[in-house]
Image (cartoon, rainbow, N blue to C red; front, side, top):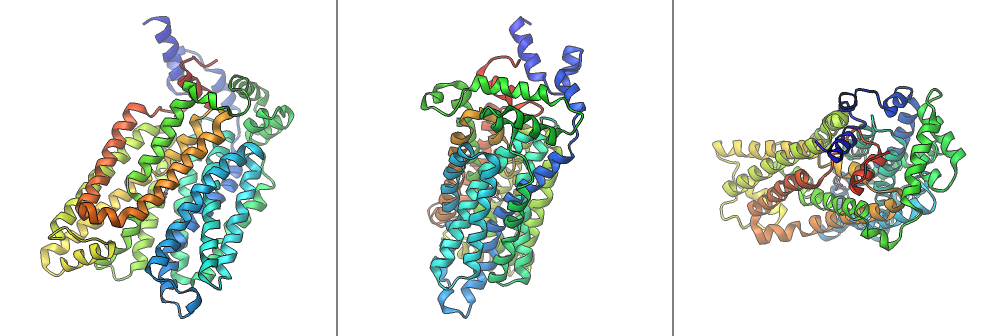
Length: 503
Ligand code: BGC
């Protein structure tokens, strides 16, 4: 092994359990982390994830609210099918714009203030929906809550990755998705008891708590140091790491990385490998997350439950929500042990197989395979449920949907957001994360809007086989290009892209 290989091995091992075996000594990093207390860090993460909780409520809101709004006696706000589809999808458009706004905000006003700022469109959006007197108020409310979701989906992962340390960053970062799915599930559950106006009012609670709670939480040390505010950065670190940790050591380490990275984003930075490589990976992760078809499948979930003779459709959606929460919780618990790549691969394989089985199910049950709408898909299934053996096939659909959703929750749900927050140098974080968020929400919009056309073009079976192939490509992409970030400091991750050993 030559000296270069040896350095690379050390670099890869640093911050991991293997480091001690490789070097025979405990690293400075380990000695430092042993002195850290995590209580206040957990508190800051808990407060910040009220943002993703609110964004989950926005995503989950349409499911119970739309049937209510379609059947309401109030002519002013009654939705037809087309209006209902806009009411559902306008959120993704608002979020795509919110991603751009968030990228600008995190650099201009910092991570903490951006987080406080994004509570406002959440609260106003839900207030407008609660008070809606016409369709436009409903659309504006949804667009505003979507905008807030876009800002949140950028700012919270960045905030958490910058306050957490490498021993817990994976678990803390996965709490973003955990709270998104908890919010979705919370909206489904609350929606079984509350009408759409009361539900909107209830959804405005988490963002209100977020704005109050964030008043007491610190700005991230990395942002403060990038602004030259060393004293404030040390104070923030002292809050986050407890009284025993020698925070000057961590401060010096971050400061050095900030010096390397220069101030602010310049277009010429895009020529640097430590910028274009992570940017390409981040954008592709977001594209592939949506290409799995998760949002289309979640949308269709209700019909599958209905057709599998679950009389209580609302209970079906709650079960989907709980499955997501449970498996995302497991992912969060094992993220810092299993690593990102392994979980992405397991998740990709589970989704490839289950989406393929879904396709087979449609191939066997829809006869001419020429149904062209989700409703028609449902009735195609329903038509097949009368006779004995085919009832079992509905359970096949149910099982493959369960595995698909669990698989997504284990990897492709939380990890793209987590990796996005870990791989960019500080000076391009705002710009690069905005491009990622725009890609994610833009694709979410396209896929949910084009789902019907895909069904018409490719048949139901073909559409799910397409999703299955995309999941298979995800696995190949993960193995070939996604870096393992487990146990590394943000600086070490960026040094890996640069191809230089960490200091
Ligand atoms: C995705 C959303 C999806 C949600 C559902 C998020 O990670 O970005 O598009 O609706 O997970 O679990």
